[in-house]
Image (cartoon, rainbow over all chains, first blue to last red; front, side, top):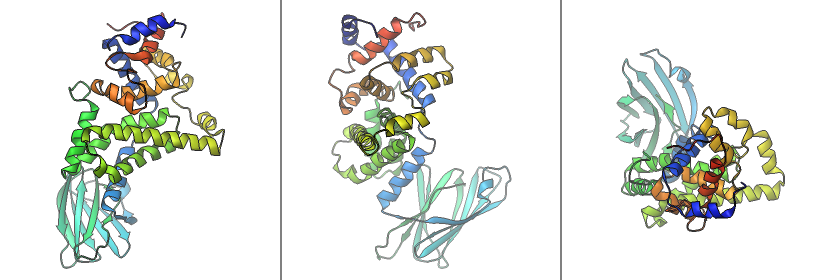
Length: 166
Length: 196
């Protein structure tokens, strides 16, 4: 930087022009290349915010089968995942048809629970039946998670599951 | 996205308003739109990867807590910037106090974007390499300003600069001294061709 201060002051006082915008654009994609936002940061942030906003307990995945093949090309397979939290467990079975959509059949160890399915950009909620069963049909592939709420007035916190990929 | 009339502050305000009106997608949009800017701010303060992730995530968690206190949705972007910058700054200075060599150590093991030489080869575009080389010689405050501004939109420049604690007139509506320095450095480099 050997320039004397005068031309810098003059340049600085001018309005922004197309070259400035070009440089800022270059700086943006340079930084995106050299130091990108970690791929899963946005998803982790959203999950953490949901947990905080709901003041929910986070369930753990206690078992899963064939989750690793979720991205494979076999159709008509079923994946099973079991989540557990204090006093409650949920098993969900994911049935992939030949389309881009999947059906979710689930079972909760307790009754009197409402299950919310959180997909990208939308949610749907149903109550479990007398045996703790619930079904969501035609769910788009992608990351989903579940929020379980007690229907009684016990004031017990809702339970949120980690996201799974359909 | 960046050619629209609405700046990031307005898009963030709209998303925040939607969230307040009970649309769950609002917060999701807000996080997607603003996280790249917050990441740029946290990293440019000198935080290593993990610390920057923690700072950005905590900023969003604080928003959950403080959302009811933000009276004007238009100020949500400023709130997010200020919170990220302050937390990044205190994390950096805590690191220095507890472990005087922490920052330089981190840069040895994890190449940082503020150390230009190793990464230049990653940039395939000759024009980008020149911009990067001259950007790297700017004072720290200019790098912090320009990197953040690059992740906002033209209508936001002045307010982003202000939220970062830069004096009025640092950028927008005039070019400001940081961009002027970069322009002069490039103009003095015979390899640089001014885009027409």
